Length: 110
Length: 117
Image (cartoon, rainbow over all chains, first blue to last red; front, side, top):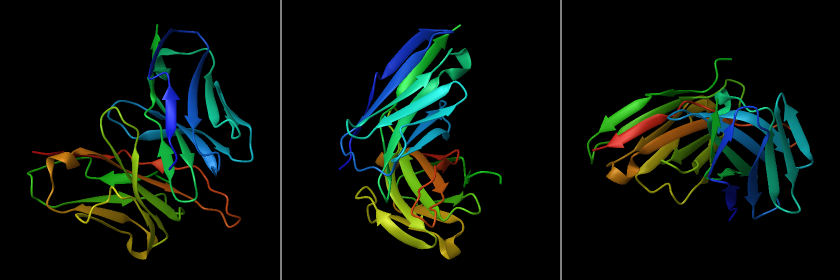
């Protein structure tokens, strides 16, 4: 069974700093990997999807990379802002379902 | 396209009662997923539909849980004889599986928070 791990569990940074969130998965036979943001008590908002044949995706200040062979993905956030404070979740997909990590709780301090 | 919607947003029920949740996916999406999320954890997969067919069920989905997607549109998740351990956020998501076998991103609804007292 796919196991997804996210490190660190929590992160606090000053505004303006660049940061990297890590996601690792045990089974490299994934179809794609998706990063989400979740605000407290809310549903998940999709940030980026990387297909298994891709190495990275970019959207605005966000860049996600995928290395299937090593079972790793990273989410890079440039010039962090207080509005980026949320929990960030990664999910690795096989044909039938997404397997989620427990998330990284990010706090950006003004 | 108004996104994925779920109803109700909150449900408080007494142990032993039955509850039903509804999910309306993005209209052109052929896949619909149900997840359960407890505090501090990532969502856990429960089941998914490809159009109206239920193709995969997690072992988390005990015989007290049943899901339907009549006509491949909206879906319902019913929990019978609720237990306190069922208290969680129930999330619905939809996505599109392309004809070439490409899987597109999942879009989540706001969730239904269930509290069993």
